[in-house]
Amino acid sequence: MSQNEKKFSPDPGLPVQIPLAFRRDSRFTAGSFMCSEQNAEAREWLSDNGTKAWPEGRLLVTGPAGSGKTHLVHLWAERQGAAYLKGAELDEQAVLSLEHMSVVLDDADQTTTPQITLHLINLMKERGGRLLLAARSSPSGWPGELPDLDSRIRATSAIILPEPDDVFLRRLMLRLCADRQMTVPNTLTEWLLLNLPREAEALLRAVDLLERRIQERGRLPDIREMQYLFHTPDDAKLSYDRTEASS
Image (tube, rainbow, N blue to C red; front, side):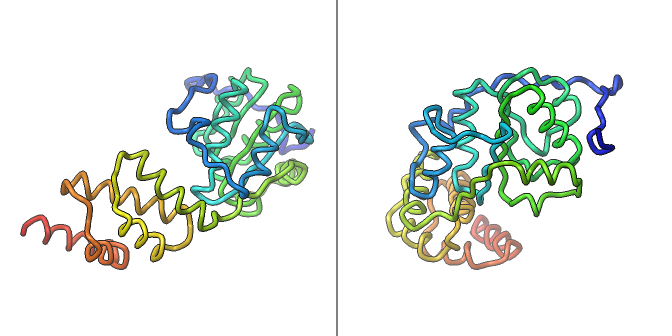
């Protein structure tokens, strides 16, 4: 056993955080998932009836925000009764408390201690279970340097979800508005699709901003306001908001 792979021992001064079986999130249902050519390979790898075996019992799914990776891993976790962990919240106690044969580590690139990630990987391999990791960035961009962890990740099958195409972006825009029960005129949705960066994350932020404007003012912004909101620094937007509120 290398120094990097030393066993953890619980700190008696810390409360034990017990990972629970996956609890369904109403936002991530099978009916609300948007299938496309971009996520077809990932769906095959994660399908219960798929022909893809996971070497080493691990699979890594990477892709930009809004590409559907978190939705995919939620669906898999629900079917498997898996434990669901978030990278930023991963700690020693959570790993030591695991009793599941299937585990999801979402936002794996947000873990703060690479050695704990390595311990999780080793634990699931020893147990003969399956570990599904999801991240925005490729492993080369993950924080920390740990040779043993790097070798485990290199031995993990990986799927890359690409940036969404035009058809997917349009469907995503409509879905995001519907999820928030927002009725947005075609003129506004077309303006957003034409003027925002062609990234799912940009649409997510835009719809969040539209929702806040409705909550604050009781109405959607018009095209003039849209042009100002999406082409002005945040401090200028704040000044503009205050001026509008006082008028």
